[in-house]
Length: 248
Length: 233
Image (cartoon, rainbow over all chains, first blue to last red; front, side, top):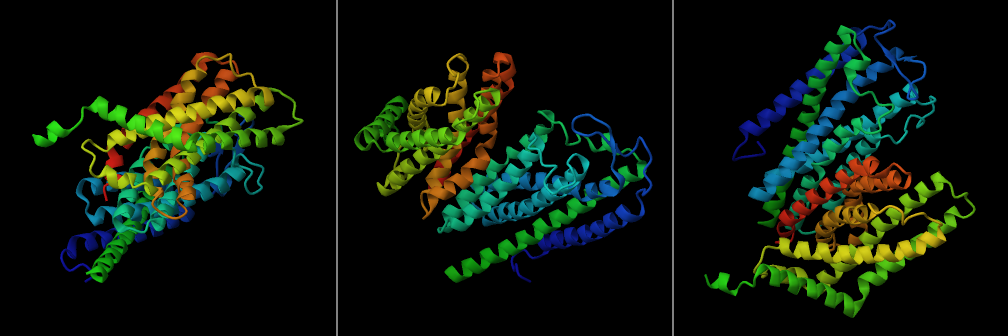
């Protein structure tokens, strides 16, 4: 086993998360296409256009929410893990916290990209003209999410640029802490100048099958993304061990 | 006990460090020259870009937002100059034997850079108001918005520049690292300016001023806590 000192708990957690995540993802994709209604009735799946004009029907487009929403939850979690990892590294100077910060930043970058892409694709249909990019209207929720995504990217670029391991670790921790306050900003952005992005999922979609699928998707895919964080964390720890052995 | 006796009093240490910052700037004139010249060039470039446009509300909003962009990049220029000079002069090695918490150095650097940035902005406004035909002097609350926004940009900037100055190409890295973190401050600054200049008054701008206060306080507190830890190795 790669970690000789404590192989059991962390690898078990990783494997459990990965297995649960895979099962969860399969269930979510099955439910998204076979359980939630295809026929849409008026009053359950209608969305209001940004200028509060005539409501448009979502048709099949709402299925993208089952990926979009869990990805947003996972991005929030990754932001929180960056903050916790940064604080814990500064307090303990243990390399495992650095590995955790980096793993969550990498997965946050990926889930943030999924949120932005799926959101933009849906927005092009829901309140844009249908052309790619027409739904991007720079309102606070969209913009703050893009900023958070750029901050994840900045953390990883900064790390790559630092030569000395100690300084790299310190900068990773400090930037992880600076990243922390950005997600509350994304969350609160919905209350400032919001015109297009739905404020609440349940305001938009009220069919019971959709609510059930949304809850399963939120749990299943978030676990899958956390499984990815755990896998990247294990890889990071292995990399740290190799670096230590080379230096010894 | 001997250490405590040898330790200079906090106000004396602040005064000594602040005097050092001013003395270095008076000798080299590096920060004000680079930041000021950069800001003036930005004003000229913005002026060229908007020439011929009618001076309506949209024009005023756009130009004021552009001036905030110029301010942010002028701050980055100043932070990079200051941090790379410190690195060359062995400032961060000297930090290790400082008898006070390194947060003190952060605080003094923040205040001194804030003073230089405010001076730069004063020059920029004096030039921009006639050249870009701005209506700028009728809102006293702007005198609060400007230093608050500067504080929100400079606090994470001072912290991050101490790390990015260690590597080659650190100037570009600081921009990449600072701008995502400073975006809430930029949003607050442009929002408050727009509301004040748009005639919404102090009430309309208060939410943005509050955002600036929160960001300034949070980033300053984080800088005080983390500066020493980032530069101890």
